[in-house]
Image (cartoon, rainbow, N blue to C red):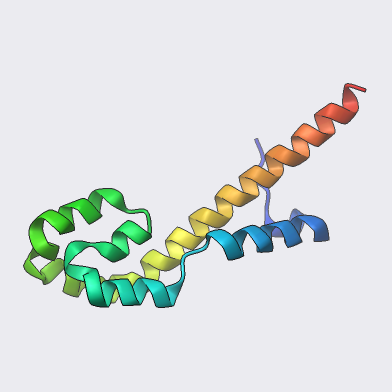
Length: 108
């Protein structure tokens, strides 16, 4: 199974990718605000979909603040990784749609 890359997309596919990313991607500003106001309870990690570590932070009050402080240095990377994962999932969905269209045309 080949992995679809952005350069393999048509302009219609790129428009769909852009539209879906604008709906689903995680905001840097929102993440930082959540870290600032709810960091000790893992609010920023819940927002980024890192539920396991978010629950651990919630139960330990952010590792008594140590974990929250460490996230100060890790947060931009976590946002980037989460958004890349979201983009890859959207690319997979686009590939599935293209294959389904191609298969339905072959069957006719």
